[in-house]
Length: 254
Image (cartoon, rainbow, N blue to C red; front, side):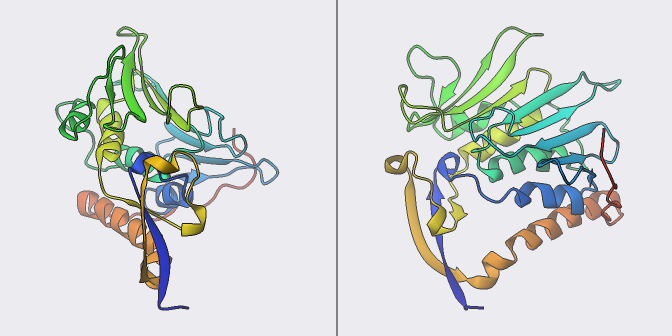
């Protein structure tokens, strides 16, 4: 293996491109105990939480499919059912912010955070003729639509009003606010996202900052393993028990 490899560092994060889906699915399975058991003839990924209440579904295909990634949780005694969807072009780091908060063994914070707070701190503002908040470059916006009981949160990345949407995420109004806040914090984070230089997306290229440099090859090769180890350690530190991946189910799930 070469000692170094060239990597592109892209900002803002919402323009970084898709990334590796394993950044999400591998930690869910190996660090949080989510099980899978799909029919090998069906090209999709299904992961189910240990308590069987939450399911993640990843369906390949049309990148404009609003249900590229879907996460659904059943109703519990303490909270109504909720659902979240991310289009296929959503950077995996932004989806991972949601799943990392979802699987945090510490549980939700005592007080529900305001999802707009991190964006306001990062200089996002309300543009004319528009509710919610928009990034300083105007490309990504976050808003809450509807009325209590029939509302939803929307994140949309569109270079210009007349151009197609790059990606969109929707959250039912019953989605716990700390999970939505985890996504908005990821959107507001100025830290560049790393990508293979050969896979820099062409959309909104004039609006992103790209720097390439050589980094140790081991940093790239073991980035996912370090992420899984950190999340497993989080689980062990809070629960006192090291997580172990469940036995993969055989056959078709229902």
